[in-house]
Image (cartoon, rainbow over all chains, first blue to last red; front, top):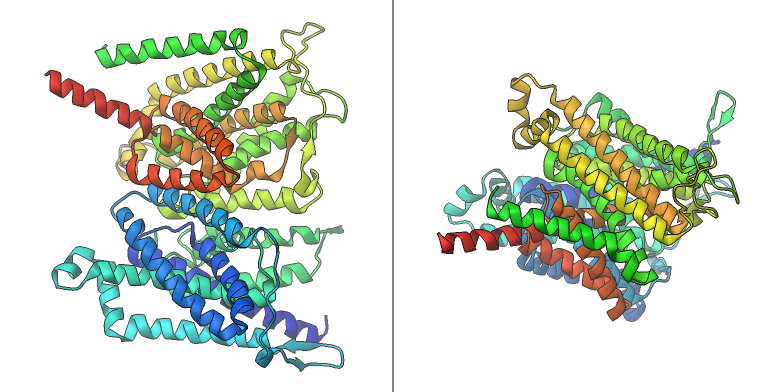
Length: 298
Length: 322
């Protein structure tokens, strides 16, 4: 593997890792602050991608479609929290799993009714459709660089929101003691509704910006959800730092696992089995540090 | 015995008699449907051992169900029958070994981690069968000839006949029920119930709780393997969906719909869920939507399941009588 190819794969790995981080941080946020395990998180990613496809086709402008999509998913998140999720705060994880599993079936079927079961492509917006030439034959698309940058900007904004604003302070207070925060006169119900909507919008936004590179297909939500679980387990639940480290690690392992062909003792490892590498990584982490790389001791 | 217990025992005997005479009065479709229901009931009981009794919420239980089916498919020579007496123990042992391997990893974590890790490992297995050519990839494999039950030339039953298969499934269904009842009343059952309530306290009482949890996980995996084997025999085909998380989610729904922490609950849940599925399918092409709504409603309104509903009514009646 020459340097240019290596560089391309490295950039792809980082871009994939950052995208995973965006989805996983929504999952971690909702769990860390509200104590809710949300299986439907992958569905929001899928909804985001389908929204990007259908809205950009209708409106004709990718950026307006994204803006409209984010507004719609925030509203969806608030509605879901108000209708269903708020009834689960004091309930066992078991019921959260069951209810959000039901939501997956509902969203999958609604997706099938509204948008059909076909695979769609979303064109890259003209302003970002250029490529940066690396060698005579290899080039790197600007859109992927923009994706990575967008993920970093959002991560920084989220950090700022939670650590350095008044709302963030209230959210952190709510996470450590819901009742006490409420009795201090803070509208905790509204705050939780916002946090849930933020998590939903994060997943949907990731789906929207991923749509032009990954295409839009029915099973995309489940795939992302399971990889995000692996990210959260490796990073340590509730740890945003851990989610970032684990997402980048998985981006690297998965990307290079698919490119490199290993030979173990003369036996060529099937490239199909490269998808297994991230689970292998999870197994190692479970054996070595069951609480995750950045998690608190269990 | 309380009056409630006597009513329960009578109801159970009546149901068992009804199941025993069913093939003599019902048509082929009904017999095969009830066969499938009993298979799913075995599967749901095995998950309830984890969720309801040991307090371990597994979202990857289909892995053991599916693997057992795949073991039957892979051990059946093409166009010939495998021996029932060899392939069944082989499939159950395979599911048990997988449960031992996965269990020794996933039991290192608890709570919400456990849910995520069980799902991830089951999905890993799903990808192995889906993405490689070991067993037909995403199309799966056909089992052209059902296992042969002959022992030294004597054939007690013929699995190619749906009536015979029904009674084999009924026998195993009753056997699993009785087996779990005995296990749960033994010291082992007491310990896992203790672990469910307070793991730390059981440890300080001197029980190596990890070993008990692992034993429970392996046992549940093996019983899921029995169900998976029977399901593969019934449908004559295996595919990666048998290991997928939709099946894991469905069986969890059966356990909660019926009432977890009881043995009758998962059976009721499995029967009710299959009827619901059939009902929704006959109404609309988009039956998954209705099923999703049903699952959400059960999670919100019926936390103790159908059994809880019945208990609540008898309690209310007793209170009114007393």
